Image 1 (spheres, rainbow, N blue to C red):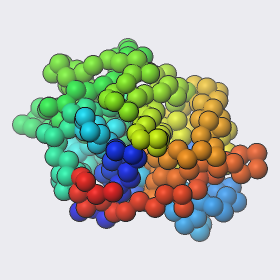
Image 2 (cartoon, rainbow, N blue to C red):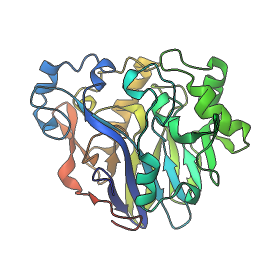
Image 3 (cartoon, rainbow, N blue to C red):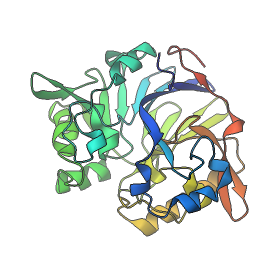
Length: 301
């Protein structure tokens, strides 16, 4: 069992974090406004999301949603054996699939893979390398890609900033006939639906889970770090439409502020989830609102 895996229960739905890696460093290159000096001014970020020195702490993880009807993986991290331009992501050899199986979710048990968008750190485990060929990792699953998102990257192709991402992690599952192109409000399964959160990419979506009067929201990359709650205007250098990304953050924060909705950050370090509360003219993440437990199996909550 990975000590970094966490589980939350939302009504009859279980959400489990499967971590590829976590720690300080790396995020600052994508959030240039989040200098160490400015991060230190946001005191509620410590100790979970920033070091005493003001270094951002982040994570790359997948989230497995288990409903009474389906097992759904949201975003599939960087993946092993991938040629990547970012040195820390190049030719990884992690225990991700073993950790996932140990948590109770073998690859063959997954029904649906949903990518919030098609960036390098959200599609990597879509495929695995077998005999020098990229094959679908989740052979029994349908892969859901947003139609707008897929069309954008199919026209653009591989991203020179990161490597042959489309070629090795998107196209092979499409060619295998496992992809369904969906709209940005698609219902993934009963109680699980997509919601449009554009800006980071044109077809970016987040995931809303509703069960027995409880609600959770998986962010995707409409924000990368909780510091953007204090400063929604702090954008990522990889946001395709920066003004739209800022507007999306304002819309989402105002929508959920002061509500019981559990917000689960796709790149948030542990404890990864909390509730958004207003903090003067901005917002903060209240992580004391929900205290998840280390995951020891698919049914733990």
